[in-house]
Image 1 (cartoon, rainbow, N blue to C red):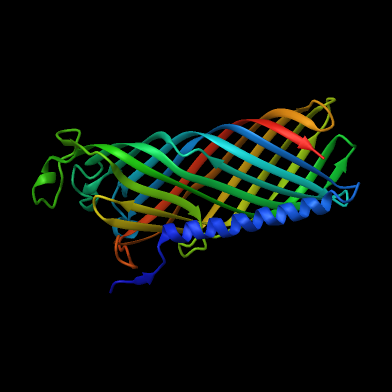
Image 2: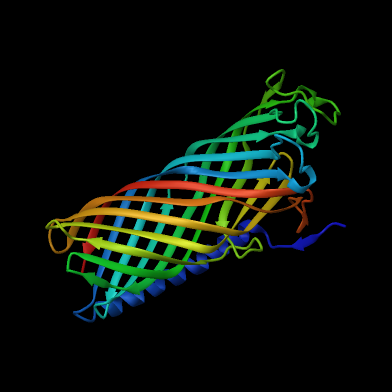
Length: 356
């Protein structure tokens, strides 16, 4: 029996979600900061930064482990796709202190769409023959030019501002966040098992022994990862964390934050253009960790300059995969496989800040 689910077009849902919610967040922050400036006990810090974002987004497909238990030294990984990237990034941070002791912070990051690195695709098609001598040998490999289509990461947090000896401040945080990143892979260079052009059902000759090689031109794959509601639709997620401020040296301010998303769901949309197939992977029981460190020097009471560093980790966790022909509306559950999604990224940027 085939399990069928009905989902809207992933890209249309993503675009609609971003436009609607980013507009709402900007409106909320603008209204709050206008209110904050009406009281002399309140203040607003606005900072922008420009730098470089780098990292890797990965998708894995495993054969259902239960079907292969008891086979010694058997690695059940069937496929792996790695999207590596390094691109210029832009950040905006707005922080308010309301009624002297209540912190409100908004942080948004984006990046410049451009060629950003390489995408590599690995396949081990002999995994379906676990007892064969070639079971763990690579049968397919391709390398592509990787382009960033878009990237957004938004956070909204609130918490009490706690002063310690006037030199250190701690701010326990709660809030919400959303993130999405999309790539397009172009101009592939392929190495496939030599039986690729004939009807052959395996086992397949490893490319380390012999391979059929060819190139493609144009767009091959569209791939996105985003925080989701556990059903493949984009969604915000709850976070908790801690922010700290240190002021031991005159005019020098050190700040940082750690945010943890304990109930994080992440999904990926994968459109293989030449095969005309969509894959939707959904991972429900995951988590996300964001960290930030910033050092600024205040030139005067209004203007400051500094450096900012960020990192983010989504660990590899198991999920499920659905698939369909690109023109169809209904997804079918992919039996005998499990998907896994992971991403690690970092940023280094220069900061220009304004205080009111």
